[in-house]
Length: 263
Ligand code: ADP
Ligand code: MG
Image 1 (cartoon, rainbow, N blue to C red):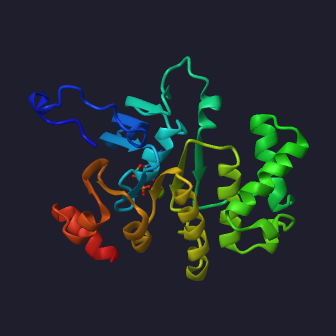
Image 2 (image 1 turned 90 degrees about the horizontal axis):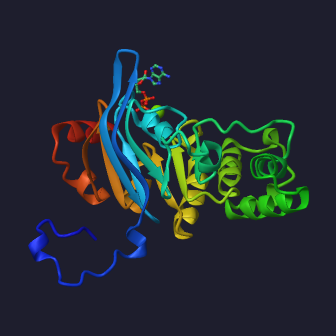
């Protein structure tokens, strides 16, 4: 629900914005320089509660940098970022507390090999949130069940497939009860037959109403699950819209060229 362009068209008593439209992520005018490299050149990304936004674009276009700016793993050179109402760039913000609202899953799962799936998930709860051992274990078990790994809690990463390991990484993130989940090419390192299970876990999260920003080349998943697809090239949003529009009738030559390559 957008406000009318022309205020004169506004209803006399406009209804309050529905809860579903409340922005969880609000990034405005984001620039990022690495030395002389101008990687993000004024990106605006606003993600509503429960929205699943898919970010696509050529390699090197700034997708990972954008995600990393959202939780301040990278410091933007300019711009404004709020997540769940918290100003991520304010020096007074407790960034470690703020980051607990943002779950992140990368291409590499980075599990501790000497700890079980349950141990890996529970560790985050104990270290990051200071949960007592028993509560951490209980919550870790619930998180593993949510990614359909309830029966693998006592397995070590080496005993799990890559797809199962990535689902443990997702469980580790959601166990902290974030307000938004960021996924950076979560299936890119996986053998094709293992991709489906990870996408299924993401679908379940979406069903539960998780707000998600996903960088991925899984176009079938985008078509089926995304509310919005954002196409980035050279550090700028070139085009965005519902998946049917972006994939079916892209307006910009660069979008057409990119989609032609990956289709
Ligand atoms: P994408 O995820 O879309 O492939 P990235 O955000 O990873 O793109 O990278 C965008 C550009 O920024 C690339 O040219 C990359 O080499 C550069 N870059 C990313 N991280 C750094 C860094 N820490 N230092 C210098 N250059 C970087
Ligand atoms: Mg990347």
